[in-house]
Length: 178
Figure (cartoon, rainbow, N blue to C red):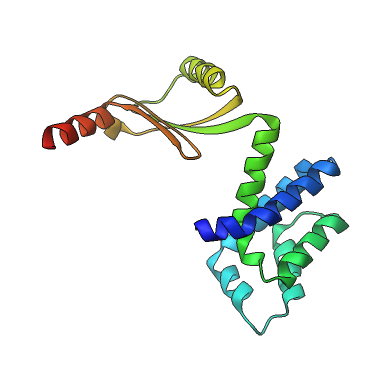
């Protein structure tokens, strides 16, 4: 995965800079998100690696499945990916593009798992606290997991804050076992 991300980074950066320069971040984001989902499909992966299918045809198929109207610049970007055999990297390119855009717009998506369903007020307070701490506009995605016993687990990117009872018990068990 790290190798794919490293190889995908220049393409994602080029797409992002182009989209930013053309003031078309929304369109690029939509196309790359859909194309990334399409390219992640196991049947499509087989198609992308099949030597009997012309590379430009592969790009056209991805764009067709993505189902959105695209500009000539976007079409050219996909043609370059196809020419260089990089269409299989679309999931990574899409994810990197999303990160670049989040950094530009100072936003962050945070997954919160709580022992019980959070009320709207609790979600709002948590979003405000995280927004202050991270200095970004926060969007929360919440879910409940009774196995946590109590507390919450907050995830965004590679940051994890485990403030759950289960997590604290696990740390205690590790400490006692050592």
